[in-house]
Length: 181
Image (cartoon, rainbow, N blue to C red; front, top):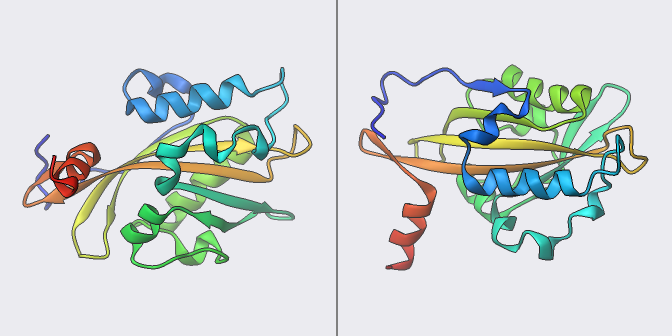
């Protein structure tokens, strides 16, 4: 995929599951796993998906606490690749103060949408990296509720394609390049 970096596309948000037909396979698999943990209309508890269920995804996973009233959002856990992408660890900070991207209102809206809808929210956005490049990111936000109803944790998973010159290189290709395969 070639994108002129002087013409960065607008971010998009999908609030229904139509994105599953076109998203990265890892995102579709994570959503399927989350759906398998639903109990009727009840949302799963965070512990319904354990680290051993998603080992390969952990470097790109974030857990975000939902704090009421508000709601407000704060980073509970941030995966190592997400920290590397940002150039800092936002754990313990509010999302409003430490989001990665160009638009704080869009970022906040993603969390508010997943809380209000009680279902997955998918976005595609373009975000600055710590190296001054631009990354194309596919991200899914998944709600969890310890009481089955009130969202108290959002799991966030991103697939990041970094710009190289005037093109984007998919994350899978970057990982192959880094490993020498």
